[in-house]
Amino acid sequence: MDMKTSYAAQLYAKARTAAPPAPQSGQGESALGQFAQSFADTLVKGEQTATSAMTGGADPQALVQALANSQLAVETVSTLRDKVVEAYQEILRMPV
Image (tube, rainbow, N blue to C red; front, top):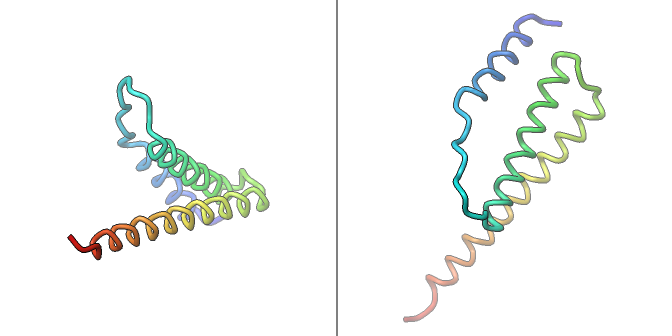
């Protein structure tokens, strides 16, 4: 195992936890907020699995599955973004 890769993975893990997001108070989350949190959790889980695989702690099948889940999440968010932009452009084309 290359020591530079292991060291880089450790530094990256430390940087990820340096500034965690501040928790929000009391009010219930909207569906969009829950979706965003689920998206972020999926990406974090994929990063953790990738880091674990680089250090020899995860099997390749778990890595492939985590990467596939991350890819699906990113494609879903991208499609949702495209639909929102398309709807906004349609609203702009409406006559006043």
